[in-house]
Length: 201
Image (tube, rainbow, N blue to C red; front, top):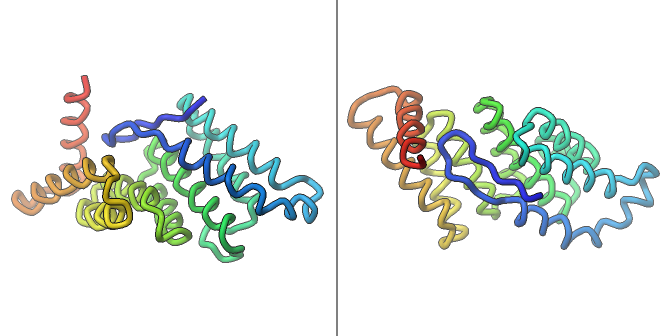
């Protein structure tokens, strides 16, 4: 089952394929982890990740969050990247933090979603999808200035990322509205969300 999120007013997006490819293509690099961990970190990690994706796709965000947290623990990298192993594990951790951000948005825990997305960009600063996730979380939180900066970064890394282009346009309009009217950014975010929902019907 492929996960598809529609969080807040952000357009639907498929991220599971991109994230899954990170895990599959780099699994061979981490075979030595199974030898170090009798529980089988890689197998447990992959099971937790897959289960989290299935649960998130079914809208069971709290259970998905638990699975993603378990996968992060099995990966052995703390939330800030402190116990960092290099390469594949860092990219996997970034992807997991991005997934956590999405489910946190689904739980209306926008501030925590921004924090998780920031961890993703800290761990993989060259990953456009991470910056896209951060921009969306910031937009949901009602921070259009920050969202514009993050979405611009995503487009600098991957100029053809259509989702980032659409979200950057939305963030720019929201920022312009806030600046011109002096309105509360959170109220502007709510209005943009309502407008986006009515357009999608």
